[in-house]
Image 1 (cartoon, rainbow, N blue to C red):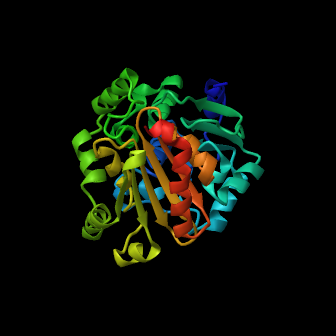
Image 2 (image 1 turned 90 degrees about the horizontal axis):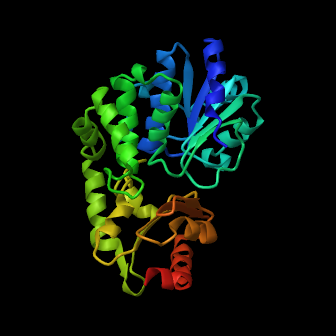
Length: 336
């Protein structure tokens, strides 16, 4: 049950609250945008907060207002442990299970703080006391707008808050083309533009801000690594750890690569498998009625949205590729 309204008295009662905002590992624009949108909103109502990310994130997100205040758990583990332990409220944004925040998960679970979940992924595990959750929202950034609206503070949204939230909505809807884009999504985006978000500048900051090596890497993947499995209407890209090293790939450089497969006529399922050394990470994107999240959960310890999901494996990348191709036979009816 969504009971987010009930947190309002807590926020209004004391400005000395110790608040932590966290989001999933390797944050994308929706994860970081929602975190910083909420962070900047809390500042506007006189409440200090700390944004703690489980890991680093892409350089293309570092323009976001308030980003310089973000604390990377992997860089300042002891400090983050103290913040979580002493927190009064922990906002958990854009994830549905504590395993999605790595080592932070156990710390958040053990904390005596009130936990607040704001998320749009399927099947939240229920660790929170307060919730604003629905799969009908385009993004967590859209939900943060709803949260501010529920608090009665839309008038407080300024350019900084609006820019963070617009970035997450824009990217999680793939520039408003996904099925999750509703009339409400467009109205929220319009309001954010009215509040100062510069849509063209935000688009440039995220999509026109990559390194030469990243651009060459994308070209290499599309020319040399793209496999089309015609029988299954599936596109597959498999990237080795050595190839990542050769192209000097850093966090965020593979963002969006999995989407290229779906741009090919007739392709219903696009998959990216990357050897991140510590584990093999997988991204799944699909069209129409193919349940990418179910596929990810069944075979690769993953999950996510119906048409956009992720997974991982500790097996060698060759075995992961073979397992993936074998699994396609079980879903052939969907893909045909």
